[in-house]
Amino acid sequence: MFNLILSILVSLIVVIVSLKLDFRDFRNKYLISIPFMVLIYVFTGFPLVFPLYIFSLVSGTYLYSRKFYFPFVFLFLCVAYMFIFRFPYITWRAADISISLAMAVVMLTDAREKQYVKQNDTSRGFDNKVERKRDYIQIVAGLIVIFLIYYFGADVSRVMITVSSLILYFIGNFFSLHPDLALGKFLYSMERKNTKLGIGALWFASGILMAYSFHENIYFLMVIVFVISVGDSVATIVGTSVKSPKLIFNRKKSVAGTAALFTVSAVFSVLLLGYMGIFYAAIASFIEGVSTYPFDDNLTVPFFLSVFLYLSKIV
Image (cartoon, rainbow, N blue to C red; front, side, top):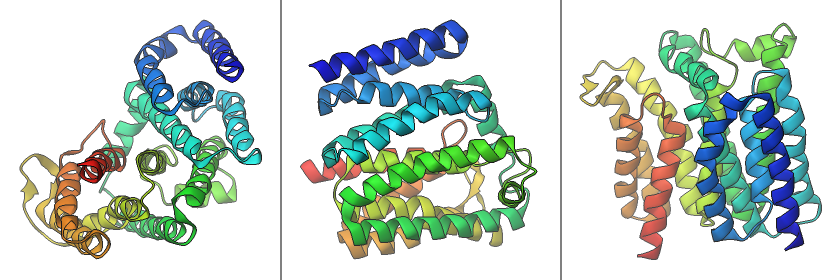
């Protein structure tokens, strides 16, 4: 009970201070977030979800500015506290969903962040050379995550990915403020024109954390990561290389790209989950095809695929 009271008290202090500083920026976000935080706590019983969520929300709101660092330090300290004192792995699922949901709320409701997301979506596909670089990096990143899941298991890799995601947030913010540094120039060379550094990677990280919050089954996790990293990248490569009709429900995506996504995802899923993998690949391909601004497929695919996988496990 003491931990719950302390967590709520800390969270309320942050909420009051942030509302006093930027009432318009935070009012709606907090109203939307209250039921999410309550549900996470009800289902997990983990008091730290409140400060984790609030610090994630404030950090996301101030992303790409110097204000980001103050709430981010406390967010990182919360996660470090969990790691140092070896919190049960089940609590990390609560942390993952808190961080992921908070970032998603910011990306979908904050006017400034939505503009960054829109710029990223609008710039998609204009420079094939940059897109190929991004696709290859995404494939490598996905394969690394899959290896970590397979080698270390869901629990240990979960901690590694959570910490890595926070480091990714920090890197994106730091080099967006210091683009003239050598590493900053290199990172921007792989970014789309007129797009904030790492905006796509943030969606990717949030999607993986979302998947981790749903599952402990390593094969489910590996399938989800494969779809949003390897499958999605192969879809982009094939879609920009092979001429084919556009999807009826999304003119920015092609039949060839969606077919490629389904094919590689189905093969991988069948190897891990049996013939039901074909069904999961079809769902993933459809969700990826209909996803459009402001909803990024790096979040929508993990969410809906996680729900279907979870339901198939309990039915």
